[in-house]
Length: 287
Image 1 (spheres, rainbow, N blue to C red):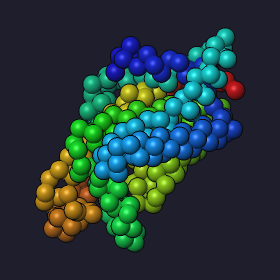
Image 2: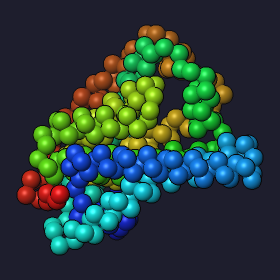
Image 3: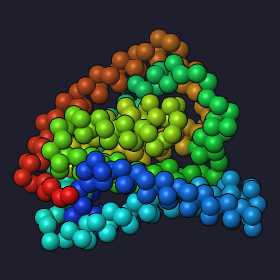
């Protein structure tokens, strides 16, 4: 949680994007996605489709975020004379960073469980998408962990909370709308409802934690916990094919755990609400 562990984030702290800035970040990310796919396609010509299926994501995924990061860094450098708006300020009183980390990790697991029955209401996932998602959690463990437990938490939290949410809060957008929009943005970039719906629900939680703590390291931890749990479950033979916890738990047990998760989530969010919100004058407003 130390500030020194996130020095790279200081490159962006003079840029707090508004609505137009958010749109430009998204468009630059789409440019990065095209570049990443072209590179993996070319590599596939030389190394074969099997190589691409195993290693393509670990190359294409981070490349997708390079253009928006260059754009944000350039805008930040252009405004270096203005007051900095840190991405990872970190406000943990009265609990302290370790207790906050433990609490939000538990809240993430509880929220993921609560979102589980919502996804069951959707129609069956297309086979191609199901295979793609399965490859992300049941293939090469080290590659999967690198992609979903390291790259995804860092890049997606940088974009959705560090840029989008932080930028809107700095523009004095009401916190509830800023959190909801950043959660919608987080859901939208997943490009399918089977991931987008739980991403939106988790994004609201991540956004609230960031709003109260201004700690990007905390939301990265939460994102990492959620994704790592999916990879771990994907390695367990009896669980790898489950689509919902309702498939493996008795109904009564499922709903007892569900109720416990709801209670824990309510109490946990109330605990987070006691953290002092960063004063508006502490957050600079840059164009």
